[in-house]
Image (cartoon, rainbow, N blue to C red; front, side):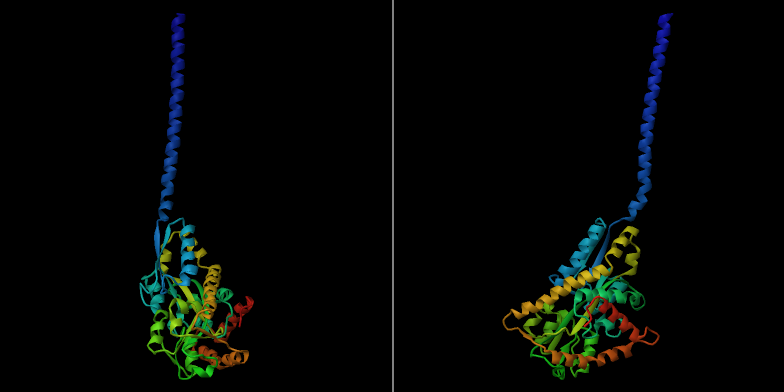
Length: 364
C-alpha cells in the first residue's frame, strides 16, 4: 500500500516537472515569436531606407580645385551621414550637358543635382544677378555666406522649379594678352565675360563680348577670338588659359556667383531620414565652407602665377582702382532697370545684399 502511494507521489512529481518544462518552452517560443513579429513590424520603415543614387553634374574637369574642396567633401559627408543609403555619382566636364544647360538639367531630371552659373543665362535670374555686380565682396568665404543668406527667400520665387541647396562665389579679375591698368583700355577689346553682368560692364566700357564657357576659353584666346578674359586666379592655371593670357590685373574686379540645385521629384522620393541628411548639407554653413575652401584655393593662384616665368602681375594703384569703380557704376543702374515689373524692388534687393555683406565685414 505504501509502495503504491509512493509511486503515485512519484508520478505526480514527474508530471509537475514536465508541466514546468512545457511552460518554459512555451514562454521561450512566445518570446521568440514576439521578437520575430517586432522585427517584421519594423521592416516597412527599414524598407524606406532603400539605397538611392544622386547624380551630381558639373562642367569642371575632374582635377579642378572645386572638385577637391567642394564636390568631393560634400559627397563624402552625405554618404557617411546617410549610412551609405545615398550614393553620390559625379558627372564632371559637361558629361550630361553644356555648362549653360545645367539649371535645366536639374529641373528636368537629367541630373538629380547640378552646379549652376546663373549668369551663363543672362537676364533669366535678375535678382541673383545683383550678386554679380562689380566690386561687391572682398572675400569669397564670408561673401558666400552673405550671398546664400540673402538669396534664399528670393530663390523660392526666382528658381521655383528646382530646390536650392546653397549659393557661393569666387572673386576674379582681368587676364589679358597685354597689360591693362585703366578701364579706358577695354575699348575695342574682345573680352570673354564671366557672366551676363560682367558682359554688361564690358559693353559699357566699349569692349565686345565673346560668349564661351570656361572650358572653351583657352581656345578662344589662342585663335584670337578673344583678347582678354575675366577669370579667377587658380582656374586660369587649371584650364591652361595663363599660357594665352599672360598679364593679370591685380584687383578684385568681379564676383562670380553659383548655385547648387536639385530636382524636386528626386528630393521628394527620399525617406524622411534621407531628406534630413540632404537638408543638413544644403545650408548656410556649407555655403560658407565651399566658398572659403574653393575661393581660397582660387586666390592662391595669384602667387603661383607670380612665381612663373613669363607671367606678369599688373599693379593697380589706388587712383586707378577708384577710376574703375566709378567707370562701372552705370552697370548698377542697368541691372536695376532690368528687374521685371511686379518683381521685388531693385533698391530693396541690393540694400539687403549689401547689409548681409556688411554684417560679415566683407563689403568692398
